[in-house]
Length: 473
Image (tube, rainbow, N blue to C red; front, side):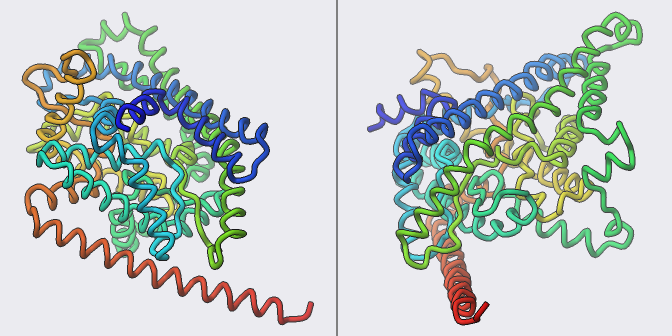
């Protein structure tokens, strides 16, 4: 079973997801040709997104490494990026079985009416496998690993339900879709609390700048494309140690600016492919569920946050936070993690945050700043356990080669900086049975509360439909 899943995962998202969605489309009644077209568009979307993020990391990576050398920045947690995190997640005993285990949990929660999300975002199940794998290696217990993964899955599904309505109201053409990705879900409490706090501060509560407002107020300066160019030029200048070197490196600096602008412009265009590919699957799945399952009205289809990372507010805030994050990482007391390879993961912090800030760039930036500071400490804290898992995986899959430099530990901003992952790890490893009890009781309470809301909403929908039938036109 482990070898089968290892082979499937080894195909990569660009191959795996088109196959899965084509088969799923046919199973739920979509014509084979249409199902294949939807699956291929999803695959092309993944390839396009991979190319754009690779452009970001390949352009920024050498520049940031040069800055590290110039200013002699010494931080001991090596940024391995999300591919390494996904590899650690899926190439373990936890990762080999994570898809069938989580699907079983999802079905059980649907039957017991403790969730209304059908999570078909199978590629991003690696996030659940990640925390399970880290706990597994830290505790040397497969049972504890699966416990952490399942708890993370349950909490994520409940948060997906809680945020679904706000998400659908904020983003256009997303009816019936929720985002059950734990990295996004982990920042929802911060978005809610900080947004409420900012609303109570005189002066700050009057600042309301969205992406469209930036374009109107600042003209060209408010365009994500132009901001990308400016940030790229700024980073390029920082790679120079003198004014004369800046003059010599003008072609390189200009090229870096254009590449950063290209990333900001291309990401929204790529996400359109995701929407075109996933929408028919989502609509057909909801239609099938409504026909086959009584009282299933209101179910949402769990999709990848890649659908909406092209929103202008996400692009602007992520772009502004990249240089700020580097500065914070250097001056933050106690932090040992310098994010480089995983900066592309910055975009995935905000898909659910924007639902609470309503696209307000100022509020979103403040929330991003807070969660990045907290996230840096969490990556530093999880680095020993992440390194243990990573070295074991790379030793087994790369002929003994370890992708972490000698004297460093490993980390990644992708999910290793998630408050949800950190909380589950601390409760499982440091608090043991007391922590496990807290997680079980907390998860059951969330499920019960979610069930109450689901039943209440279903009764309201039945009553509303009954009134429509009885009322003559």
